Length: 88
Image 1 (cartoon, rainbow, N blue to C red):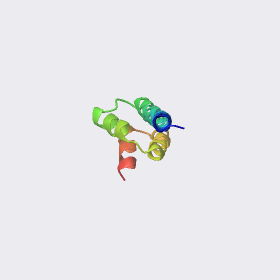
Image 2 (cartoon, one colour; image 1 turned 180 degrees about the vertical axis):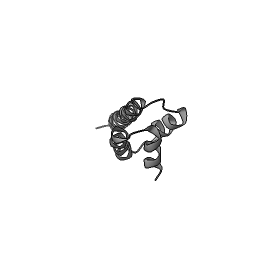
Image 3 (cartoon, rainbow, N blue to C red; image 1 turned 60 degrees about the horizontal axis):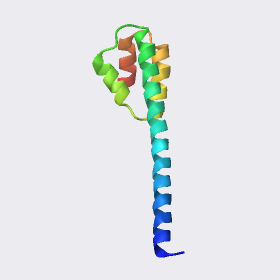
Image 4 (cartoon, helix red, strand yellow; image 1 turned 45 degrees about the horizontal axis):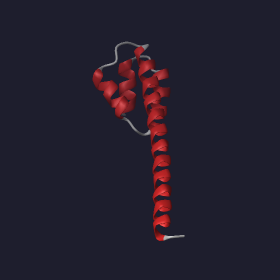
């Protein structure tokens, strides 16, 4: 194989790897967004969710924490109780 062919092959492989990593990151971001929306949806059943709390929820990137918050939001009796629980 010629040097330029090797270069093109490495470039193609690098691009494919980058695209794959981008897809994985996009899927994770989508899952995080969906989980945050679920938390907010549960809380909206309890009343008006402040912009500050929405920002705290949507800025959380740890999926495990978001899943925990979803359970807490589903069990909470009020938005205030939810906020106290996630801050403790």
